[in-house]
Amino acid sequence: MRSPRFSRSVPLLKSLHWLPVHYRIIFKICTIAYQALSSTQPAYINSMLTPARNSRQLRSTSSNPLYIPRVKTKAGTRAFSVAAPTVWNALPASVKSEGDIVSYR
Image (cartoon, rainbow, N blue to C red):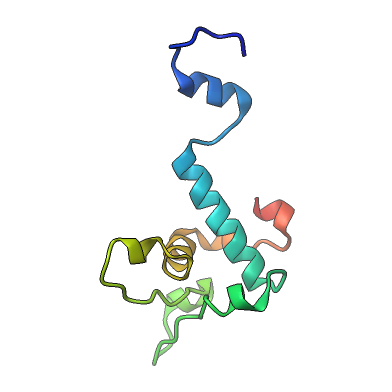
């Protein structure tokens, strides 16, 4: 980029169309979760994601929420089996219902 050594990184990331690290991690988790739910990932990844089951019909069931397991530690929230359903449930329903991976991304 031929920029000064101590220049701000945010404008450089924007010019390269790169995401900050935190958002890149969220993007990657969502992409793996989407592929696992559409059966393009191995079975062991798909087994970590279970649909949420409600005893009654709710409006949120149309958005296909995932069950978030309970954990006791901060490190437990970083596990894929907890992080993926948390991020997936936060996505809008229009994004979750995309037909293929290219339009999902």
